[in-house]
Length: 615
Image (cartoon, rainbow, N blue to C red; front, top):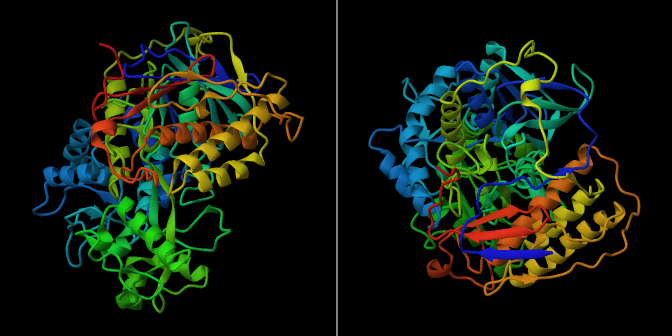
């Protein structure tokens, strides 16, 4: 493999020619915009594009109402309360981001956020109100100095937002394709976006691999939490959007900054998959973190104690657990009483009780688990990536808002604000002319015939059962605590998985570039030696193999960036480099995949990102 680091940015994005191994599309439809994802970001973008007169198709991996948004408990942050201002929200966000926020992106978020929330209410979302009032009830969460978190159903904010947006999409009659895994980006002869390929799971109007032809694609595919063994993310969060963007030649940034939510219900050392989240709002209402002796250990560690930014709380939990030789801490909300638990946190109460824990009478065992990707596909303030016609918003995107650590409840707001900006950008471009005799409902659009930018390279697929191996490697080597040793071990094990897949596919064992490692002083080369595959038979193309392959891709990029960042900052914690180093590392990595499957890493000059689009 070849790893290259430079201080200068790449030129215009060029497709890599790398594609997932998949059958050729057997069906196709035409649109003006295809939105991939059905969370707050995807559905907001779809509704606004459709309102602007664009033929819009929504593609979602599960059901329309099954996106990551519905799992959000705490709420949506915006300067809505008396005495609060966008400037105060800006200040809290910048502090949480640990010096790596793009201030222009944050300012956009906090200034446009309040009006965006009111438009969401106009779409039908109903937030909790203060007793005897029509005013939105606001609470606090970690890192916020003001009560600015709007919530719904106590602790079911995401579910309410999802309900409202799904209802609006259905009322508007938008075309949707459910249970569909996006595969790869289509491009025209000039390298511009021309749609996506996808695989529909199960029978319906469309079945198997097909294509949606469109000159604008909006990635809103959510996160990549399933790259770790324990996560708050649903099973569908397998990094599909980031992996697609890398194969398409787009830049990704800040993947090393994975936020581990400090208070996830601890279900034992063998617990894997999606874990129940204990919302930050529980601490916002006054619950205390206590250690094995019942002592509050956050007092004196930060001015906000339990409401310190998430990275600080997660690190404190890990430190105290190691000191005491235990696997978890406790969150004590017994003083709330039964009525408050039942009215304010009914979802959390039910989840705890389903696992034999009653927060009314006993402290809740909690430990950090993978929660949110602060990085992703790099965009500008209009959601444009480095690939013409490809947009990204929500957790899949790296707008620069979150920096090295996301401020609590900024994620829903970011998805909302930047989805609206993407729709405005698309609406501001001339509408494409309909092809003669074409219909929106079926058949390809001959005016948008696609051509690969180079001879296509089919990416070797991983066996479905490799997914668990990737997760365990990442949890052990690139979890909350990282070091040069743990990351090197993870990189080597991930590289082995790729070589085995390559050998099983009958190719020479050149390592997938997502595992490439840049050094601080020089550009180097290394040759990967094939190893005998554990299973000599290459897996058949299918959803589980595609997901495992995507997970390996993003895992190797994450590890490469984490190896390169030799400091502790935000939610990236290097035990061998425990201090923050602004002189060397107050900058971002911009990572691309080359046609020969090499990984190229560029660094920005400052904490601000350069443009994604050349004027």
